[in-house]
Length: 135
Length: 279
Image 1: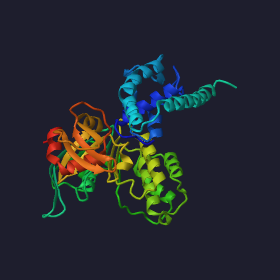
Image 2 (image 1 turned 135 degrees about the vertical axis):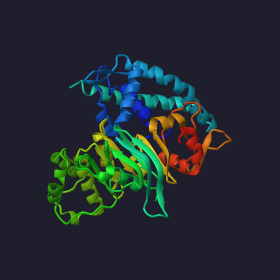
Image 3 (image 1 turned 120 degrees about the horizontal axis):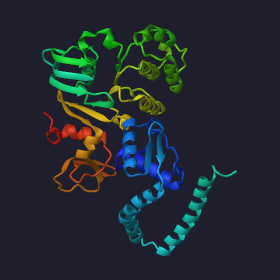
Image 4 (image 1 turned 120 degrees about the vertical axis):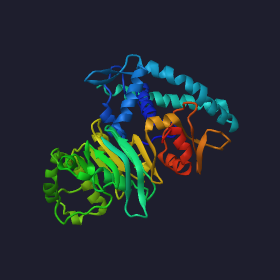
């Protein structure tokens, strides 16, 4: 895994878990990889993953069943969305607006492209989510 | 786990490597030992395992004086030097001669590592390249399952895929009972593994701190222009702009950039010292 600039590694791993929750790869009550498994997969210090899981537990996105492991909490997806929506609207979106204005891109074109992307994206995620459950 | 108490060391009267050095290392961490060439990284590792004897002061490892080289201590530690001698024999013979010194040695585990590193267990040691020999030694060292692992530049000579394998193996064995100390110049290879840094500078320990504490006190950023911000400790230009190291007054979360920190420590040792309240 390539770690991007900015956030500390334990937060980047938390973001990764959150993305999997949003995508539906991790569903409510799913058991997630142990700290050791995650550390090996990502080639990081196990202490870092322990820190990530403690952080996610504190945010009530995952919970610990003693001796069994960590599980995705009920309403985890809702919580992740609530946590991430504001920073996106406040920080990321203005950056995109700025670029649109600077490059004088027609907003109609943006809307059309967004609809096109959305159709493809929904198709893709539905495939991923449905795949294990259906014959 | 390891305590150096007022340790001084010199290879000759003219060149003193350490004077009155104090350092304590605990189990449960992967320590990164950083320092310029000649800063004393290897000497420090050698003192910890009894290969170098302090001229004054003491180095206590796992409760014993390292310099006495008691067998009860030697079987609980493995030191992988940067340059090592390998006799002309097959891997099997090497293992049968060396493994008995380590009560917790696990042969199956060793073979798993050889397999992962794509080394034929029937090889003759002399027929292997430097990198391959190193992989044998890394695999053997980890399979000894000692409480203390001392690795001097372990990723030197390893090819690109092996560096990943090395990180995966280290992630699989690090636990709260083990103390792993890795000296390195290849910080990029090990940045995600190391969770505690010890930086040597001018015969002193300039920084000895957990990565979490470092990122609480310092913030690592890349910016377009460097202002006259009082908080900036050190900056260097890069393709993306300027990489800056600043006091973390706003409690911002950032990823520790070991190379930037190392350069900052070398350039502005006083500021770092002040921030971490050393000495």
